Length: 114
Length: 114
Image 1 (tube, rainbow over the protein chains, first blue to last red):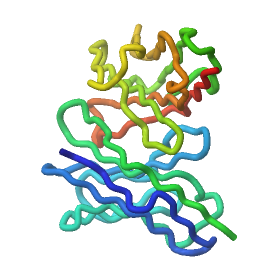
Image 2: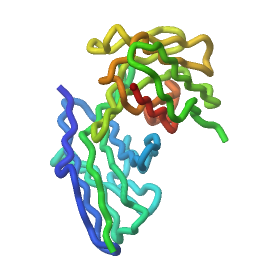
Image 3: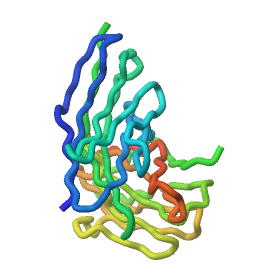
Image 4: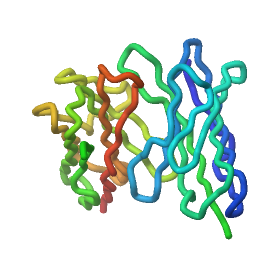
């Protein structure tokens, strides 16, 4: 069965520090991989996605993620955290065929302190 | 701008009083999804429409129904809301012919049950 694991339900960083949010998936077929961000009382906004091709994916707001097939990982990074990055982040996978159901991880709440 | 719109953004209802949440889209996507997201949890898929074909998740309670009168609109009906149905409800769309399986989310409706 396919699943997504996000290590760390809460991550706290200082403004200007590196942000690293971890995501691992389990799947027997190649997945599509996504990172979404959610601000309080808002919907989900797509940060970036991996489908095929280059394994290092750049997204909005300075975020990027690298797909590592051997590690079944898709960790999200940002070199320098900004106060406005404080939000909930969800990693998700889907697969071709069927109705492409999104399978979400449990989410990681990022706090950024001065 | 093409988008997914949800109305209202905040809805208060009474225990047992039927309520309808609305989603519309200008993207002309053929798939529309409804998710329930409880506090500090990942979104949980309730059901989706592929054009007019309705697909219910196995664990979605019978209390939740949906209607899709045309491509642009989809409604979520909660027949007898309980306190446990208080949550954020997210609508999303997807273009089956799209390249990346990406789902586009609306801003959500936060439902409070008194």
